[in-house]
Image 1: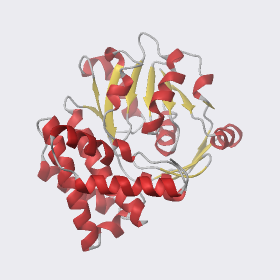
Image 2: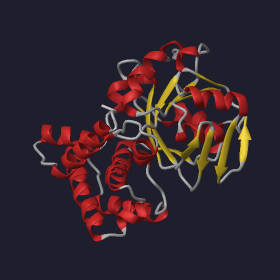
Image 3: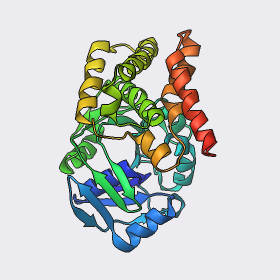
Length: 306
């Protein structure tokens, strides 16, 4: 199977590295020149749960020419339309395109470029960080849940098997939209708050004010999620958030890595901003999400990122 990782930041490097240990062909796609140059010259360095250097092909999306069997989308949310436009030449009739992006609403964007029968959506709870160009730090357990837009799990059994061969703990989930909302709740409560407060997840949850802020955001996510889909288990999701905060207590979430550590735009419009948009449409007030979205946008503007 020829697999492209479209967006080879921290999470893309995790998937690329682990899949490279299987029999399948893995190609990284990215637009960060220093990252591309480092991996081409020195290989991809991984630390944390692994201590290794692996040689992987990497190129810009527009340079890819061989038709894919599978494309895993791990680009930033606001970069998704351009990525899909740049890689349209490698999307063949039998190509599967799997979105594992953080946030909400990506299938709508994918439909502009990919037919429904080729689209898969999913969610992953693996963690990863970049120490610098060509250096990924991979730590902690995780899993993947995926679902076809059209058809059932039998049609992608080989893909699930490949993920599991790579140790990525994949399952097919007929209700993955609920899992996507669950992860959005995790990211929406932890990412922007840790970014604005410049703290770890453990530091956020370790204060009364931080926990109150998390709870206010959480209740807005749940209210909007329940307006869009059935089967949202508020109690179970809250328990999941608390468990995740303990497991990743020393972790700076990805939005902090983007904005605070690397001066890059965030995905706030696809998390809390999306809840504000959906809430207005459904007549549900979302003052916590509105405020945190505006705070992140203000910080982006201060850094000249908007």
